[in-house]
Length: 283
Image 1 (cartoon, rainbow, N blue to C red):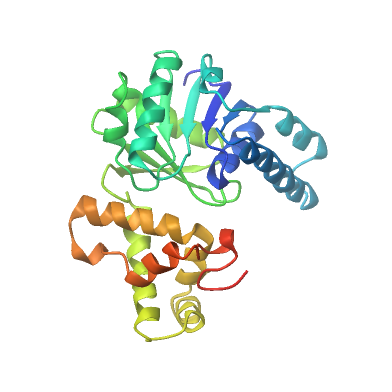
Image 2: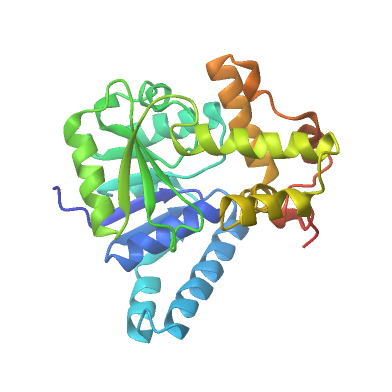
């Protein structure tokens, strides 16, 4: 495995700051980049709170918390990635925006550096095609909340090399994560299975089959799910759910992936779940 010491993380949102935290905890120097200065400040505050909770629970020492925070630097310019050893992109689920970022990273980073994406549904092959190193481009889909969830989906693009997949898998072990390989199909494994369930739960609300509380209770008590699908949708973000369903619908062409009209209306109204204070529940 290459000596990966400096890691660049693009995007300081919920996923980006969690990814930055786990790499910093593993001993890597992390450069966290976001074009919005407020996002960077918010990310450091979130990471500080997250590490603080681990200290309170006895899972991390105060010295290790301080050391992890000290390994994270922030900035708004991708040029700072000129000497990183590995990159994880974690910006919004927008193909054009991601391809633009990958093309820039390809021009800035050394040719041997792997460029990975935390995308939850977008084609890795299309992202790799925006670079001159598609063999070193793959998906590294972390689960939310990143510091607590052990799964990472590793997605092989059409040109991704076996060596790159092995490096990513070994890196997951270093992060105390479990890597599971998925093919480059829309939604991969996790969202190919999860999003139709969430979408069907939203249809059930729209058609009056049950209230959000009733639907979530049935899935928790009847199916032993730790969280109901509508609570989970609010946690993920209804805008993110809609974006993933659009990718599934467009990429697979099957009407069963058609996003529920109620979901579209809620996103248009700004009712995005926890992050906006209102979704299927009020926060």
